[in-house]
Amino acid sequence: MSAPAWTRWYQPGSPAEIELPTDSLVSLLEDSVRKAGSKVATQFFGRTTTYDELLDQVNRVAEGLRQLGVKAGDRVALVLPNCPQHVVAFYAVLRIGAIVVEHNPLYTTRELRHMFEDHAARVAICWDAAVERLQNQPDDIELEHIVSVNLLKAMPGVMNFALNIPIPKLRALKGKLSQPARGTIPWEKLLKSDPINPNYPKPTVDDLAVILYTSGTTAAPKGAMLTHYNLYSNAKQGAAWMIDAVDGEENLYAILPMFHAFGMTLFLTFGILKQGRLVLFPAFDVDMVLNAAKKVPPTVYCAVPPIYEKTAERAKEKGISLKSCKFCISGAMNLPDSTVELWESMSGGLLVEGYGMTEASPICTGNPFYSTRRTGTIGIPFPSTLMKVVDPDNPTQEVKQGERGELLVKGPQIFQGYWNNPAETERTLLPGGWLRTGDLVEEDADGFVTLVDRVKELIITGGFNVSPSEVEGVLRSHPDIVDAAVVGLPLESGGEKVTAAVVLRDGATLDEAALRAFCRERLAGYKVPRQIVALPEFPKSMLGKVLRKQVREQLMA
Image (tube, rainbow, N blue to C red; front, top):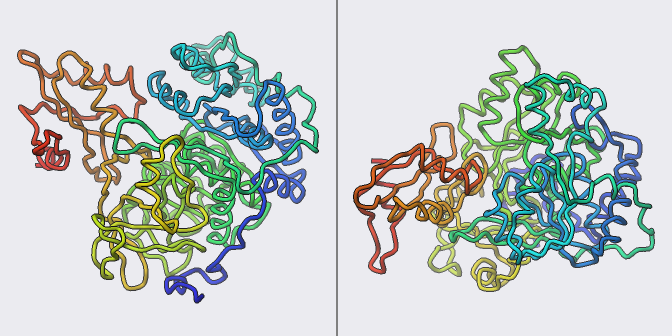
């Protein structure tokens, strides 16, 4: 079979097809450790862990989990920010054939509940500052063990000492990073276990590795099932795309969260495959990033447009060089030309836009790191990836080239379906392995794709997906609200702001600040509406369904 026509725009050396994986992510890690050995695997506030040390910790925590009763096929919840323990926990769970379930550690008790009801994990490895939200789950969430992770213990000793100095600002920072977690098993106890027996069975390439929850058009998130094959394939596709990245020599700045599909693949699989140094940040802080860059210059710096803008502006202001940044991919939201120009005036390489979704491990398309890239597009399909553009109402019918249609993708990175949700799986995975993305695109004559709109009504803000239905449900629970419609309004900087229209009960007046505070108690910060507008009524369909598209048009007008 001849290579698809779009591969002629690939960077020279990038293959049309990857060599497909035949073993698990555990083997990926072990292969990299054999090659990298004493090279640095992770760096956290200056403290480093080598690849040899990383594997030793993985094997010890795996044995600790086994002694807690975790076995192959069990789900283990990770509720962690970016930290060295996150990397260890991810691979330790996989080592015993169990399944990683990633969670945002900033989620509220309410937001976590549905996921835990769905995946039924009995063991969670949790940042100690988030432990209380797990312990406050109702009795039907049967967590047997919570392993608590203290971020301070992964930091250099001198920093720990400084945070114990009785200065209010330092005390406040320490409180943000760690909180007492009673009734849990300390992470350090697992680390003191003997290494797991080398003969203990390892997972196979086709075993389920990760469940990642993705917001849908309904309030309840769905768990996308990704195998070792899916994730290993996407890491190898990334390596084929970043063909000039050198094994053992790249510094990857982990500012994207590893509980998100983009960050997970970029750092936990691709980064380990390339034997890179993962410089870990629990949250994005531009000054913290630039201070680290003075000592360990980043070479792989992948982010969302607002982070590129903040980093470039502050680096210019402080006179800090970004010329080490060679591999920069923007995703999750529209990349403005002005951001590209600003970043490339400061960095040592191109800033290219890519596209993906959780169900594709996540990356499907990208612009080449080469002169053939086309700003304003989401690029062309990755190696070993096929695409077609179809009629959204009849996905068996392709549209003519240049016409608007729904993007379908196919490749080794495509997920296995949704956990406990065969109906949604059937709607999303078509015969022949084609994934319905739910996104409307236009494909030009060379195969470059431009994202036009969404079939789904997800709001993308700061690189995160927000389900309108979930936010609407919270607003409707307020005694002054009769009905709510939540939409995304475009920002000049790219992406969208969560905006709510509400119908008030008779006699009530709109108090935006109080409503936002109400939402903040029940939702993660990025889901809280930035603007709330009162309308007398909503446009509705004949069946009484609120027409969000028309509400959005009203608000924009």
